[in-house]
Image (cartoon, rainbow, N blue to C red):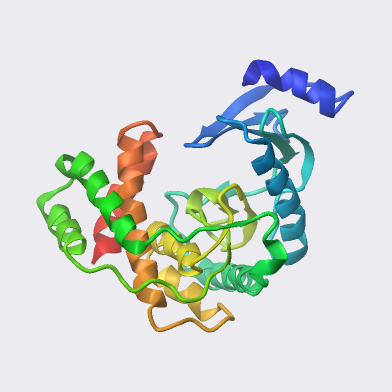
Length: 283
């Protein structure tokens, strides 16, 4: 990927001089690099021209809708599955704790963001966001499989919490679907943990028409139930009776998935952070 960046920039940003390139991170789907400390270049591990085209269009729409910064695409290469955008300020909130003084500001901004996104009629974005209706029993089955892979890394108390969860019946399926970021983990939220200011929302590749509880669920997993409740309090649209139950369900499934990812192919920090948050998430 690094060897290709010079070629891509020569083609799409002629005259732009590359002084430095360093890797920012690598996930299941993408690799991310920082060029000259100001240009982010993100490439798909398995390029999908249609998906890249949809994301570029979606990001342009989100810049008009979202009350917080969203990347402005400077160039894209659909065949290579690459987009480039100016680096946004702030740091990913993954593994960080929001200071008590910043909770109110964070909740206000995140509630406004989610409220604005979830209020968009899904039909308005059907060209750029597919419907995602993965059944909740299938979520539980996948989590049970991930748990089998990681249970030896959990304490006896943590295993008890997870096994009690796996023995329960999943919540009822959502009735109403909304446009969602669909991967709103703390690693995709840039901000200042002291002030609670949100300076950017990254990685919209999984955006879909799906259960709006899923967008709040990863806040529950990564930042805790208290932050989840504060954000929900600032969230405008009405929620159904099963919203909280589904959010907690998704959060617990996603946490076990993060442990499995961090202990196998992903960065170890995903497992470390998830293990530290397990008791809080499952209690």
